[in-house]
Length: 367
Image (cartoon, rainbow, N blue to C red; front, side, top):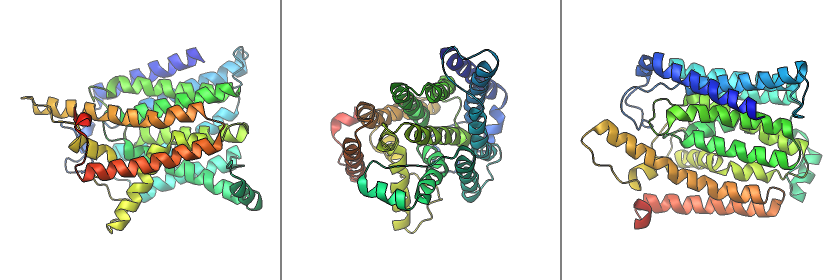
């Protein structure tokens, strides 16, 4: 597992460096007038290529080790990993295509992630067998197709949720890395070493990308990176619950409640205003923190000032994420406690959002 992670990290870091070195001019395609743009200069949005390269190579080497050299680490990375890669490719290639062309509509990208969801059901036989709550479990028994619908929603929707929170240097990448390691930790607790190996390799590839992304912001993940993270984490979350009945389905829900609720709240906020949910704006939680909590950095060089302010935004959200990850890891098999923390996060998010909008933020948060 360690050597696969090392390969994933090095490959991702090298590929990311190559993108920064030779594809910087391509970043000029990204328009200056987009509301979600909070940087100056041309920065490549092809970090997803690096994350995908590191992840795929590590997974393939894990398969080769099992097939050709035995399996001393009991990872059991057999042919099924190839099916995971096949499920991942439509969403990843759709996101990278958008990063290259800037011409793919939201509907087309949603179609690609939905295709990954359909393949997860057909090729991997994925479903959600239980929800940990008696009345929901009874509903799933009466209507098994609901389990497939949850899988489709998770695999198709989570990539876009990560894309929404991908607004500042190190934000989405660090959230993905933390979530992957948390899932891997619980997978090891229940003896699922194969799943843990895939997750640790993905986290390592993300780390290779972050070398170039934070704090200098020389490379962005783009849609491709967000879609890789979203699909891999969605597949791992479903597989962990499906393979191991001791793991509560609300464990991955609490782990991912920040990007999931950010997406749900964003859709609600736009519908109330009469705006299509597919239209980008600058009113997400992380964008409000950037504008109203992170104090301006005074410096003669405008580019450096924007970069420093950008970098100061992400740690606020890392801390916000850890407030859900820590209880999720501690109570991964206790459904009612996990549900309680999910509800607590939703209430806390709404209260914090309204406080920022109404300029009622404590002074100590601005320091």
